[in-house]
Amino acid sequence: MNLESSILDSISTGVLVLDGDLRVTALNASGQALLDTSEARCLGVNAGKLLLDAEEWLGYLTQVLESESPHASRSVTLTLLSGQEIHVDIIITPFSANEGGNGLLVELLAVDRLLRISREGSLQHAQETSRAVIRGLAHEIKNPLGGVRGAAQLLARELADEELAEYTGIIIREADRLRDLVDRLLGPNRQLELRPLNIHEVLEHVRRLIDAESDHRVTVMRDYDPSLPEFPCDRAQLIQAVLNIMRNAVQAAASPEECRIMVRTRSQRQFTVGTQLHRLVCRVDIIDNGPGIPADLLPSVFAPMVTGRAGGTGLGLSIAQSVINRHGGTMECESSPGETRFTFYLPMEVQHA
Ligand SMILES: Nc1ncnc2c1ncn2[C@@H]1O[C@H](COP(=O)(O)OP(=O)(O)OP(=O)(O)O)[C@@H](O)[C@H]1O
Ligand SMILES: [Mg+2]
Image (cartoon, rainbow, N blue to C red; front, side, top):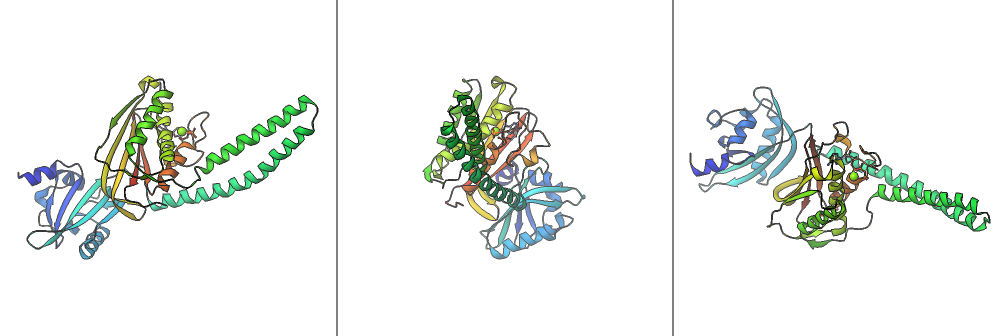
């Protein structure tokens, strides 16, 4: 085995190399496992023959070959020759070979459809709709609420009886509580204050907060990619987002002593958010070893007011997600008992909503 193919085989992503006529010139070990075939069976075979229903797949490949610009697709379903369906993210990059020919490098990343909250357009659309409803509702609540509070204050001044003043006090406090809830529902509404920032500074800050809050009982492990460059972020809002994610992990754990959180950063090439392809994004994984998110909660865990916790308002993740989205990024979640992973991606070139 030559060096090139042993390097290819050590990559956990499926890698398929095609020539200018879409014939397979290489398929690494992960790609063989994913497509349930062997390299020997595929070499020289047209990429269209690797799948049962190859129309969409061939469409992507020819498009990249013709346009000579890369393409990424999320959560594509491919039907293997055996009839089995696999769900993958596909990244196709064109290249020119030394000998003058051109070809395609195809990366296939398996996606577990059941456990992943996808970043597909339909979901983003649903979230935008629910946010619009909340904004409208919040407005309708806050206006009369201001009136109720003001009237209670006026009344309090007129009342001589101390006992009655207690009632106006209740009205004012409850009105304030409702106003705070509505404000939290709306999420951070001020403009992002963007400054070039090292993401590790944010993560370290939250780590120290969690450490202090838990009286040093929670273990937070770090696996940082030191080569990540600074990029423009709103420090305070990102701290809030990460804190919301980590606090959930601490709250879900049976005890703080058992709670272990891993924070990992990586740079990632060619990543799409919505319809936008980014050359380079910063990927942050926050993984905990807790009991996991209940399966019935998982599909809507980012929605506001969804909570599995007595006393929870169900806003932490919705706020975190909205902060990440406003940075032009996206967030997803995978969870099973013993491992819950929140992953967010932030574009490192300036591209803000
Ligand atoms: N790491 C985790 N492990 C287990 N369950 C989780 C985890 N993160 C979130 N959850 C579940 O998702 C629910 C929603 O989380 P979210 O942060 O949005 O709201 P909350 O924690 O209930 O309330 P709030 O954050 O507003 O105080 C939680 O109540 C919990 O059931
Ligand atoms: Mg929370």
